Image (tube, rainbow, N blue to C red; front, side, top):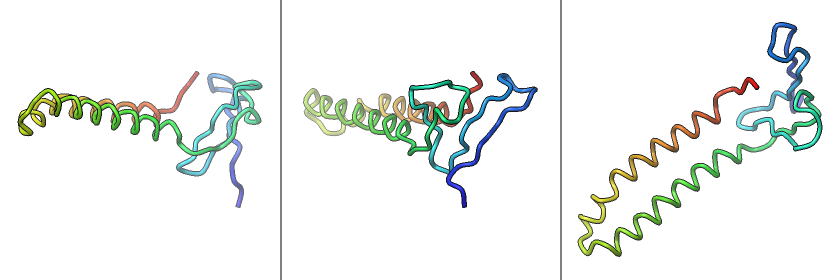
Length: 107
């Protein structure tokens, strides 16, 4: 079983002849930073690091905000209630960021 499959755009694509490695889920093609972005040899299959960073960053932001709220409000119920809008916003940001990573890029 191959580790990757070579994907090639046809003559009707945005960049005819562009190649990319087609990686097994959940891996993604990651540009090495060297070589042509149209050549599959410039990419490797790797873990989805971006998704982990998005989730970890958003969880960290919520935890820091909760810690500050506990210092500001003496009542636990007021501290928790004050964080509801931020928590909902961070959930929305996380979903949007993961959706953005999952969308194919054309350029």
